[in-house]
Length: 166
Image (cartoon, rainbow, N blue to C red; front, top):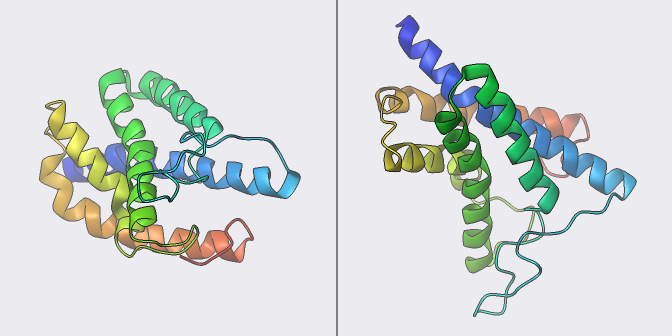
């Protein structure tokens, strides 16, 4: 049981920590007017809507790289660190792409995908890179992450870090 708890923490902590940094950056960016540029370079897809949207930015990518380096030092495993933390950014970008295709306005929710996009991508990438020892905790990780994500988003909203409570 303790092994499962350790794996859940090892899996979820870097994802949560990186998400907190993204939320803080977006709060500072909009509150104080700091410059940032979307990674899709404002390009439209063939349907005429933005490719990903303006929430995935160059500074967000920089935050991702810095978190990979820091977490890689902490756990002494850059392969796991790179896969876990980049899955956060890639999962959110894929989610942004899907939201644009489903005509969901930025800031509005896409149920389950908004709460689990990075975790789904983490498991996809971990298995792609043959890091499968996290698979045994998936049954625990998804409901724990879903619940804690919902709670943290409501808290961030009440603290003024998010515009909507979802």
